[in-house]
Image 1 (cartoon, rainbow, N blue to C red):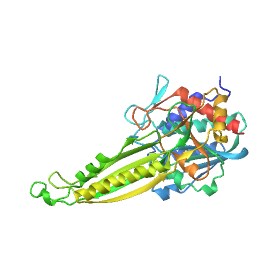
Image 2: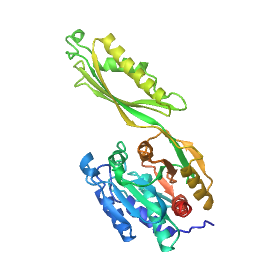
Image 3: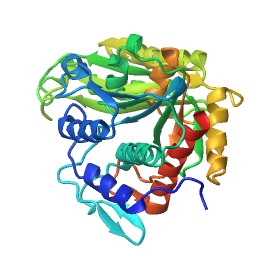
Image 4: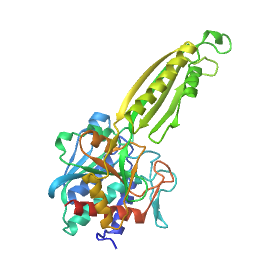
Length: 372
């Protein structure tokens, strides 16, 4: 039996309530209102920053504070979801919470939000020891970590952060994340009538296709991936296309490999454009930096101790995805990701077992007690 019992019925009800609130990126206003009301009811001091104004959204990040013992630690989740998310209807069937199959569920990341809220209730109701806390619920995470990137770190005092935003079983600790560069290229050719005088045109689609065929894409090694995820261009089947847009990315746990992959993709495009008589404009944007929190770091030790306190076997792993943890580490706050227990995120097959949701809330209680 875990040392820290939570109210499972209340937790499930709260998660399903939050999941049903629409909160696409830049449209999180209603769910922000719901969580700020609950945080205030629990006695935390709550503020909503001006991230919405900066990123074109309807609200900002939620920052809540609760006094406690010692230096503050941060608990973090994001509030936005991907689509389709119009009229999410959570269902509890056979011990699993799912949507009705027409939308995502939003356990990524509202299961984390619900688990943290329930853990706060338990700690306060049972007068358990706790550290000083900063609870940060970010907006627009799914579209480039925008909310975390707009946080005013001068007003955050946590010396480490636990970010509840990973699929897989509760007990997962993601202590390594890759860096990512986003890649955008416009290939320019020359328009001409495809049936009357195609030889007077320069086919931008053909140039792009040649370049892509030469690129190393997919999983390149254990540390590195690359992708071209969007291609658009052309006007009609009877016009030689004079413009094509490509968007892609390169990620790696090794900065040198990431830089080399971007240079490779750039070179493929430049060479294909030169051979085909066209031009190419390329823009590379750094999205976030890699991080690696060592296994003996106090943050990882805290996570492991809390897991053992509630009978969970810890498992450290690296991730191929980006998260708010990348931003916090880059800004000097050591951060790791925690598994929340959901599966199939970003699909209409997303679900979370009730047992995992409960285990995550128990873990959050244990984190607070062990940190204190």
